[in-house]
Image 1: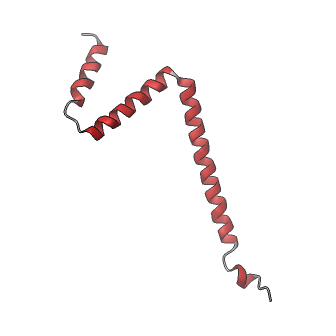
Image 2: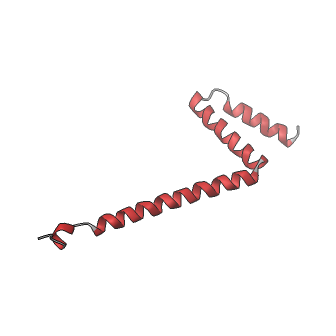
Image 3: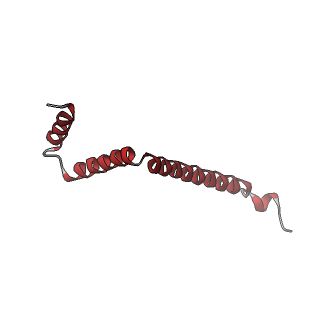
Amino acid sequence: MSSDMTYQHLITEGIKGLPQDLLAEITDFVYFVRRRAIQPKDFEDEIFSALMKMDLDKLNWNELAHLEEEFVNYEQRYPTA
């Protein structure tokens, strides 16, 4: 038996009887791996884009937190009258 057939057999036997939610998770993983293998450049671009978005979201959150700190006790520090 070739190693490919061994892996396919192990995977097939390993998923038998698993609940639907776990099978859905395994399916997601299989297609994730397939996409990474077949379209590595697209996959790389997707990962880069997702990481960049996370960084920008974090930056925006940090800026908002800083801005809120600037206005703590604003009325007491800068009274209008």
